[in-house]
Amino acid sequence: AITSLVVGCLTPRSMSILSATTRRSLLTFRHMSGTNARTMATIQEAVAKRVPEWRADIKDLRAKHGDKVLCEVTVDQAIGGMRGIKGMITETSLLDAEEGIRFRGYSIPECQK
Image (tube, rainbow, N blue to C red; front, side, top):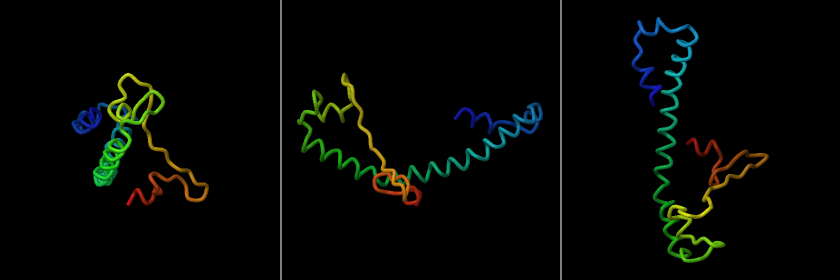
């Protein structure tokens, strides 16, 4: 964020003071940061559409199994912030030799749509 601010504030005069390599790097960054921002916006929109479903799944899991013990840790402890326990909640991906990696059942091209 600070780098974006600095790059955005550079004037032609201040750019002339920089070395040629630094100028090329900053111009490349300026170009790439716009591309990445569009990509991130698309990804964020796709995730935002799925959040209500994920929240409902977690709520259902807690309602059905919140009091069940996972070793010496309950589901409520795991979902409720992991305070005082060692553990991690994560989602794994599937790496198929033919299709490539899949996240939540979706291939990378499907995720990009």
